[in-house]
Amino acid sequence: MIRFRILGAGGAIPTPTHTPAAYWVTVDGTGILLDPGPGALVRLVQSGDAPDGVDGIELVVLTHLHPDHCADLVALLFALHSPLTESHEPLRLFGPEGLRAYLEQLAQIYGRWLEPRHRRLQITEWALPEALDLPGGGRIQPFAVDHPQDRLSRNGCLGYRFVDHQGRVAVFSGDTGACAELTTAATDADLLVVECSAPDGLGVAGHLTPTEVGRLCAVAQPQRVVLTHQYPAAAAADLRAGIAPHFDGPVIQARDGNLFYVPRESGEENPWSAP
Image (cartoon, rainbow, N blue to C red; front, side):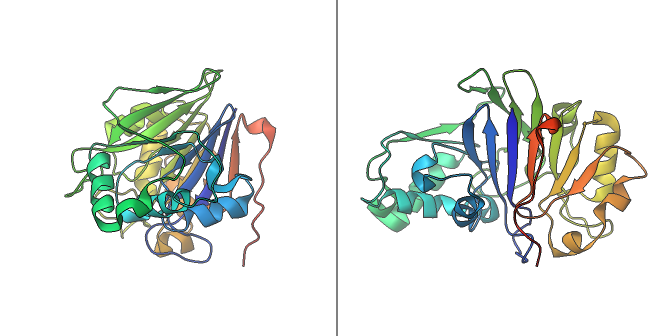
């Protein structure tokens, strides 16, 4: 089973219902903190998905190193420096090329304050098509996406396929423009969580609009689509209207707190009430 919690359905500009990127993905019982943007730890604890708090976070996966997708790494490492933490399990960090350099630069700023008190850091920069096997038979498969950068992860931003032990698939696009790699990864996926940063007419390079998402889905034919990474104009718009001429499958415009299961029959809920 795959469980996909939307902790932050927005972009870098937060609104009450769409805060910066943050996701908690569970694959056959293994919890994964995906793209911990600003406030991710607070929203994770509020969700009830991590009853052990930061002690329960063992695996962090990053698509790229823009602050709205990784800023709470600082908060996590600083929390783990506290003597009040109890876990001695390794903290495993996976991300694009540049992750090590990013952490080294943070260490130059904060020094030992970002050294976990009891836990060893295990840092992996993905080498495509490398994948990570998970306990129980699932896996995480990164793939390249089109999101240009000019700093630490300039050589590659990533999306992810999460596969459970029965072969069911949830795909996360990360930040990206239209690209063949995303189409291939999303083909026949049980769940596609895809960025849709701006409505048609306001799109920018390296991000998707509803029409572009619709064209992607027309080819890939995912079973269900969830739109995330919505900046304020996108969050206020009916993004599904731009997708409908191209794709007639189920499309959900996410907001903070939404929870999705694969397989779908397991049920879904949104425990956070709208303002």
